[in-house]
Amino acid sequence: MKDPEDPDVKREIEERFQWNVRTIVGDYGRVGSQSARWDEPVRKALELMAHFRVHGAVDASRASYSDSIRELIRAARAAGCDDPLALYLYARLGVPETMTEKDRAQLYAEAADGIESRGYSPIRKFYAHLRAAERLSAANERQQGQAAVHKHSTRAWDLCIEFIGDKAAPSEDVREAVEELVKYWSGRLQPKRYEALEAALLRHWGNEAWVYRFKGTHFKEFAWEARGNGYADTVSEEGWRLFSERLEIAERALLKSWEMNPSDPETARALMGVELGQGRGRDRLEQWFSRAMKLNTNFYEACSIKLTYLEPKWHGSARQMLEFGRECARSKEWGWSVPLIIAEAHQSLARYDQREGQDYWADPSVWPEIESCFEAFFARYGEQGLGWRHNYARFAYKCRKWSVLRRELPLLGKVNYDFFGGREAFEQMKREVEEHLSETK
Image 1 (tube, rainbow, N blue to C red):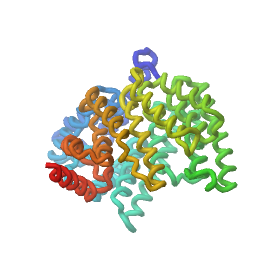
Image 2: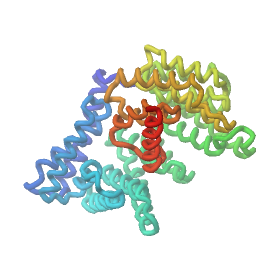
Image 3: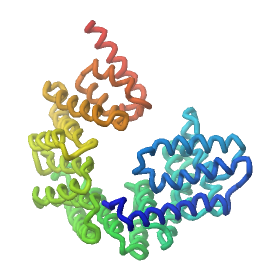
Image 4: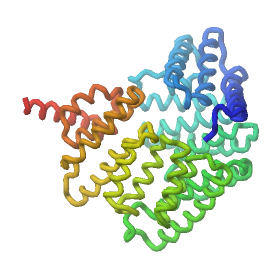
């Protein structure tokens, strides 16, 4: 991982920040819809947007950026601002919670069309069209709506290919754009599209380690698509052939990426995924796991891959999974959410019991480990760990710990109903809590 105190890294970050200022605030000054009535809040919001894009992920006051941008962009809208980039920010951060997904998606589409017609930089057009496609798709638009999704998603693709050719752009911004694009196209990325993307990356950014990590990561995913996630006896002969071929390509690309930059924990994690498929030996898995965790001691995702590797379905056993989960819970070196891996181990093992018609969660030895790891996590991280309250509540429900669940429900913050199976399922869970606790009075 890059040292933020390294002078070269500091210079790289500052150059990236200035580039974002030019293509955000500078673009507004060049082609934006300006007026003395709203210029001040719009410019301040766009300056924060540029800062957030570069520094937000590591800044302790990250949440305050969103709050400040929201306040400024709402003030600009109230003053009559009709600039499309400001509208894009409003759609992202400023809309009231009561706005429907369909109406919000239409705001994104309107912003994308406006940013396109006004002549903003390709990177700003790209993100506007990509977010419009995402929101229109999420709003579950049918028929005419699908044509709009196609329009914005294909335009985003073309703009990303164009942007890759901009050698003045910071490498990190190119990487982020490519990864965002591919995430949207996940599962639908046809070979010809991928080949065009890879060719553009190698032609313009072939000296960057992340390009080979990108290639390796996606060939690993293509390999698993060919194989499927079922047991070995469900895989066709052709599936095995493609699986093996694509994992070999992935391994070569990832090893090249590691050779170019042996300080990237994501490359080590990707190579763990390759070993999961190739199954050449536990020592190989442990080598890449050790490298990943030395570079990022809070690397939950690396621990999750190791846990999968240790499943009975792959290369381990239930005992090995629980041993590793307990190691994560005890560790004084590994932090953040890593100690919660023991809960994921129980979640994975419960799926095996479901196939055998058993109720894993009724085992009295399960809940104490889950309770212990979550209570320690919340005691240590407080509000920072708010997002994990949903997980804890769901585990309490599975284990029928009604008093714990009643205590946790008010602590969830904004409820993600989909996490619990939908709003009706969530309300049913709340009713069950009251029913069971009333019976025990």
